[in-house]
Image 1 (tube, helix red, strand yellow):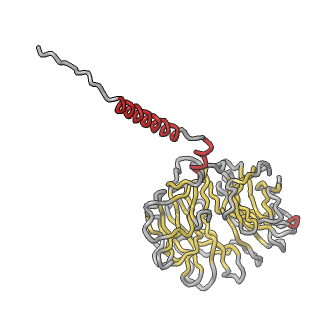
Image 2 (cartoon, helix red, strand yellow):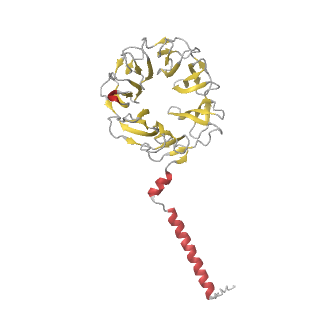
Image 3 (tube, rainbow, N blue to C red):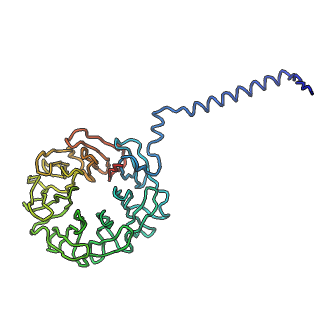
Length: 371
């Protein structure tokens, strides 16, 4: 067996001090690195503010647009306004810009108005990464108004051909059809719950009022049956009522009417102009804008006209882009004060007003994403 002998090495004193010094420097370097990784929670929160990512649409949140980065971009934040993230849509085709964007729960995807380098716009269905699922329109100008029929998987939208018309297209981009083909102005298409008729606004009779038509372009009918102006109609989510703004009583007021055109009812009953009605998801409430009390504010009322409440009181600002939370307990809206807009939330009883974005830039267009 061979024996292994370890020879004891003797260093010159100056070399020993150099080794000690190098060891101390290495230890200090390691300590500094560890300290850097241990970040204060508040500074971590600031570092995460306005971070860039793709939206996690598996969690509830609020989608909105802002010019806080110097140009208009889309952001996604938690329901309490925290953790705003700038959305990059990394698979968006090069050279295209998003002009408008709406998330459809039924498709789990976005319907977007994309503009190319020549600023020509078309409607597309796009996923959360910016990947195009289908192109809905082809060389037909549109104004971004549409409604989706989940039963037959098709869209009714406002196109510009002869004038502003109601056009149809399937979700895969096939089956384009112009239902009007006239020099009258049509807008605000909404599918009947069974997908067999479309309610829309038209000036066919000389003034804007409500009409219906079948998806094959037949059976055009006057739904309003009045000489007064009516518009802004939409179905309650349960399909049992239509809400609209109407001048039947001489001033813009909020009315409900049954899908067969019967029982028009003024549910706001005020001589001041009122407009822009929006249904709650549970079909029990309508939020709208009113000029009563010499201010342009949001009000809420039950579908039978009871329980009227004022939600905002902002003499210097105007509210827009309002909608309900999925549980119908909150209203989301934009308040614009001299060009500075923020996204707010308020409970349906008028309490708990909260500025969710609180940013000197223009923030607007808030959309609830429930899951």
